[in-house]
Image (cartoon, rainbow, N blue to C red):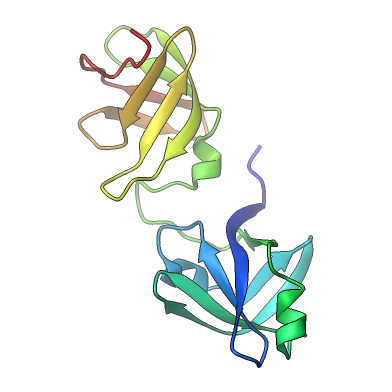
Length: 166
């Protein structure tokens, strides 16, 4: 079952003296996180008065946080977004939805394991598949035959070298 609330970043510091917080986004881009009017911290909704990208991070002014002491109290907190109403581009998925998907070899129908992690280096995501063996599968069309989050599976095309525990 898909979680309604998804981890989207972490408050890592304050910014200035008027209560802004610096958030390291766990999204594709800081701009994605800036589009939300409400973030969730400790299970409670917090209205975002203003947000802007800054050096790969997000600087945000949050309701109820008016000074550096209030902002400092949030340092280390994880921020969440509500997936309701978020429309992702075709072929894109929340990473949380990929975790645990069954991974099937498209050529043989063999179950290889499940998506245990998603690495996010600059070029493209890499799926870490764990089963009897471990595989690192780049998330590009050449290797992804079908992604069916609703069906709970991912079909892949393997090439030599993807298995890491040989």
